[in-house]
Amino acid sequence: MDSLLIDWGLPALFGISFLAATVLPIASEWLLAALVARQVDLTAAVAVATLGNTLGAVTTWAVGVWGGVWIMRRWLRISDADRRRAEQWYARWGSWSLLLAWTPIVGDPLCLVGGLMKVPLPRFIILVAAGKAARYLIVAWATRGLMA
Image (cartoon, rainbow, N blue to C red; front, side, top):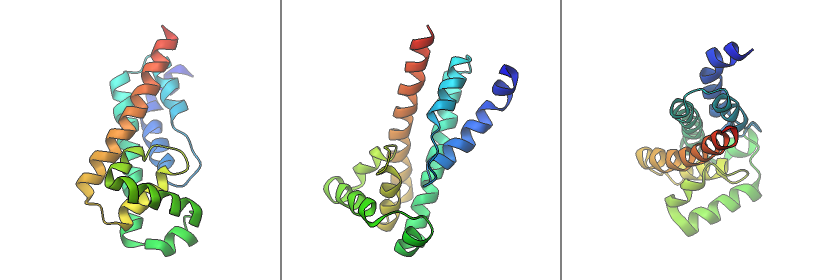
């Protein structure tokens, strides 16, 4: 079982992290913690999780850019309340609010609003990746600390 986790862990972490950045109710932190607990390279695990999660967020941003409100309501099922909450954060903090794209409930709508507001893709990626990397680093370091 351990060799399976080690051999397929990073690709699985990438996939789950990608899906977790969409509106699917999936968490990726548990797999990151399991991999770090099994002594997978912490830097590689954090990088893979951050990359997958950031690319998933870019997908949500793209839906905001090209799909707009119709896809948000009909396909992604993001409620008007969640969208309004994300828009309020965005109105107050501007694109800096994207540093919180990792947060539950409001994170995915923030990425969508970032697309709706046409945040330039390079700025979007930098802000979203920074927040997501910080979150994954904290999870990985906490796991490593608990295992010491």
